[in-house]
Amino acid sequence: MRYVLCHILVFLLCVGGLSAQTVVRDSAQVVQSTQASVQAERTAWNTVHLELLGNGLIGSISYEGAVSKYLTLRLGLGFTPLGVIVPITLNGFIGERDHLCEISAGAVWTRTDPRGGGDFELGATFRLGYRYQPLHGGFNFGAAFTPFILSNGFQPWGGISLGWGF
Image (cartoon, rainbow, N blue to C red; front, side, top):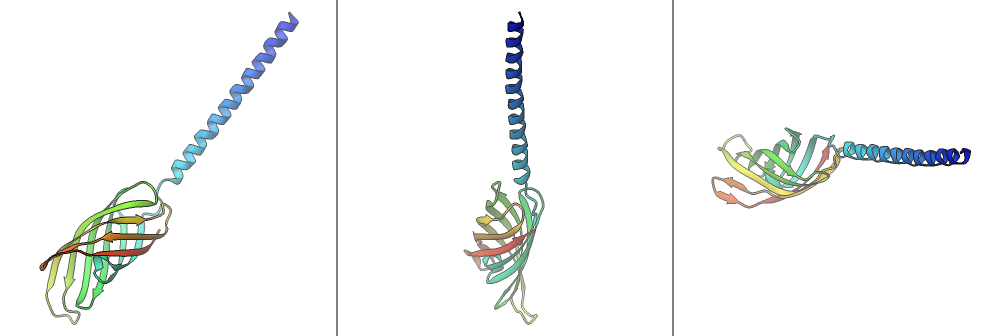
């Protein structure tokens, strides 16, 4: 009888030990999964860009702030040989991590004479491109097709941007 009780006790200790190992292993996997999902959440919601060509025609500086998880509002100021240009766009992003597809539409306001004369013109601008933007901020890069619709018609255009997310 003592021999049978001893075997039962050893059996229960072994099964209990294996169960404890399983619980510890499963708990560790849950913790790792939670840490990974926390790290995957974007913490940098604002960016500043210097853009060559693009929505600012020749060159521009822009500030972009988040409206929601996948939407941002971008305001820029560009200078051209003929005057200034102010593009304002609503940007949508497709993607989850650092590599995003960027789609936007907005208005562009131009002044055709830098000396203060000339007419103001309101047109439309669009953006379809790629954006590298780390979740937690830092250097970002974009390249896009950025056409315009102005009084002289549809103007295909494109540009690249370098920026910093924070």
